[in-house]
Image 1 (cartoon, rainbow, N blue to C red):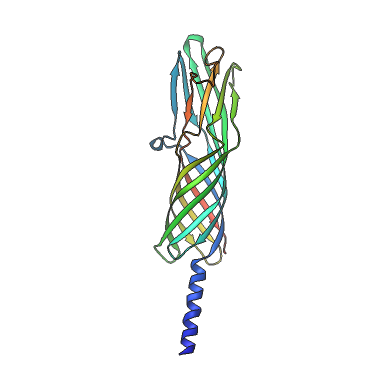
Image 2 (cartoon, rainbow, N blue to C red; image 1 turned 180 degrees about the horizontal axis):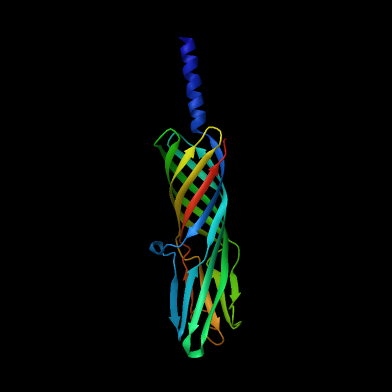
Length: 233
C-alpha cells in the first residue's frame, strides 16, 4: 500500500512539473498591411495637396518566456523590437509637385498574454492567446523629400509609453529533443493613434504642429505572421 502511494505521488509530481514548465523562445513577425483592421493606406487632401501614406515592409522580433500554469493555460511575456516603415507621397498638379519621403517608427514592446492550448494530435497543439502590451517609442521621426528638400514631414508620437491590445491564434509542433516550432498570426491594436504626421511644403502647413495644422493620424494597428521557436526547459 505504501509503495502504491509513493508511486502515485511520484507520477503526480512529474505531471505537475511538466505542466508548470518555463520555456524560453525567439520569434520573428513580418507585419502584414490589412485594411480590415485600419492598417493599410491612408489618404488626405488639403489646399490642392494630395497625400498618401502607405506602409512599407516592417517587422517585429524578440524573445518570449512562457510559464505553464496547468495543462490548459500558460502565461507569456518577453520583449520585442518593432520597426514600422512608411512612405508618404505628395502630389500637387498646380505646382507640378510629385515627391515622396520614407521614414520609420521604432518601438519596444513588452507583452503580457494568457494562452490556452488544445492538443489535436501527439505533437500538435492549437493555441489562442489574449492580452495587452506596453509599447515604448524610441523617438519622433523627421524626413525630407527625395526630390525636393522643401517637402518635409514630422511625425510626433502621442506618448512615449502606450498600451495596445493583443490577440493571437496559431499552432505548434512539440518535439522531445528539438524544442517547439510555432506558426500563427497576431493582431496588435492600440487604444488610440500612436502618432501624428505633419507634412510641410514651403508655406503649406508651416504652423505645424499647432492646433490648427493639418496632420495624418498613425493608427498603429497591424497584423503579423508569427514564427516562433521555443527551447527545451
